Amino acid sequence: MKTFKSRIKEIVAKYSELPSDYILNYPRITMVGSIHAYIENHKGLISFTDQSVVIAHQNGKLTVLGKDLVIKHFLKEEIVIEGSIERINWD
Image: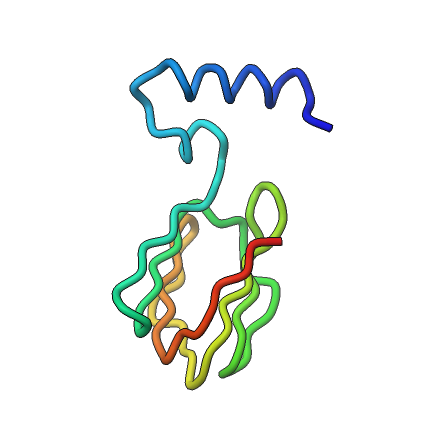
């Protein structure tokens, strides 16, 4: 069930010119083919192997699955993952 605060944020996102991912604290995922994933607005790394990277975000977690995965860059608000990316799950 959504809280009053989250409903207000959704309304503001809908009617303002600001990006909704920014207002709602959703991660922004940019893919380059299946070899590069750029994830902004994350809340930290949960786990990492060469086959999966689990990243926390405001509303749960993202799981990047693939082969030969490496973390190319890891900054406070953004992470870059490279390798053979097969799937990204949103939990």
